[in-house]
Length: 139
Image (cartoon, rainbow, N blue to C red; front, side, top):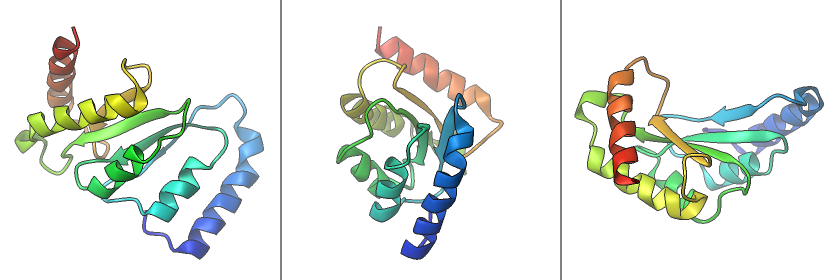
């Protein structure tokens, strides 16, 4: 989310105009392939009516630090822990380590966090294998 302060304020204003029409709709704001700036993270976290946030945590190592500093309560986190640019060479151990860190922040149980690619992808086989691996370690 490479927006300067002026653009972030414009985004926040546009979202606030739409907010009243979103009643009963689950809103997911997702970024990918990059870090989110501190200012952008604060802006996103302050939005009312957002159900979930999705962040790239493969290349977004600074974003992970922002989440460690505080994640909005009652929100879902979609954690992009699989390298969407090269899923076949993904570091599964690093993905699991990141998920364990997030579990301490967001809470135990899949009702507060989900995980997947750092971007949309049609390569579900690896994601399913990773999900099975995580579930086995949580048993």
